[in-house]
Amino acid sequence: MSNQKIYRLTSRVIGCSLFVVFSCAALPVKAQFRNNFAVQFEEQCQRARVGAVANLSDRTQYDITQEQSYGLPSQNRPSFAGCDLRAADLRGANLKNIDFSAANFSPRTSVQQAIVRETPSDLTAANLSEAKLDYANLTNAILTNANLQGARLYDTNLSGAQLTYANLSGTFASHIILYGANLSGATLTLGDFTSARMATADLSNSNLSKTKLILADLRNVNFSGANLTEANLAGANLTEANLRGATGVNLSGVNLCRTTLPDGTISDRDCNGD
Image 1 (cartoon, rainbow, N blue to C red):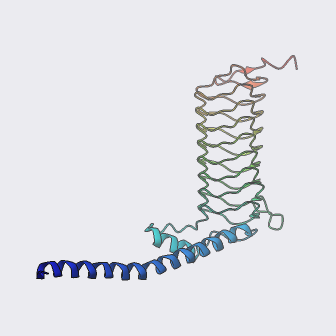
Image 2: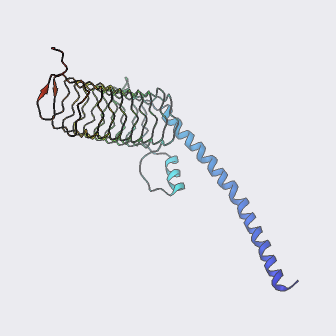
Image 3: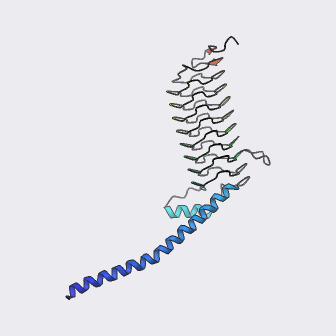
């Protein structure tokens, strides 16, 4: 065998040996890291499941590990992204500026006002995009500037919630409860709010273009200055609603009684003599 052939064969053997050594050394480390990360993730989610009256806005080692592992910039905000939070008790918890993207809150998660503190849950600027919030109780929650894009909000109770400038674009929110909620300046474009219960809500200066509001209860709702271009209001009840200055409004097939129209006039079309 020539020296050249021996060199090639030796090189291959050494190369393969090095590959096997490094592979065998690396795999257990990676596996151990995955296991540790999984444990930390579960511990992080468990914090939220029993987070009543807790301050969950404090970062943990999990948040730091997550950023380092994926090369993410430090966001100075804790993450519960992807957590299974079904039936979690978050009443009165401090949830400000938390990432809840893709978290599962349904069914019947309680994120309502805590009786012991008499303060609402703070979800200011929280990321709830793609989160599943069906049936969750978010009564009086503070969701100012929150991101709920693409979230599921079926029969979710947001009565009295503060949703000013929140992003609810593309949400599935059929039968949602928004009695007395403040959605001033919010974005609801392309959302499905069929049969929503929104009486007395404030939707002034909000963007509702291409939003489904079919059969929605919109009594006494403030739509002043809102964008309703191509919004579907078929069968909606707009009794005593305020549409002054609203744009793109199609009122065919809606219930109008003592309703203030975009031009400031009041319509009694469907008052039936009352």
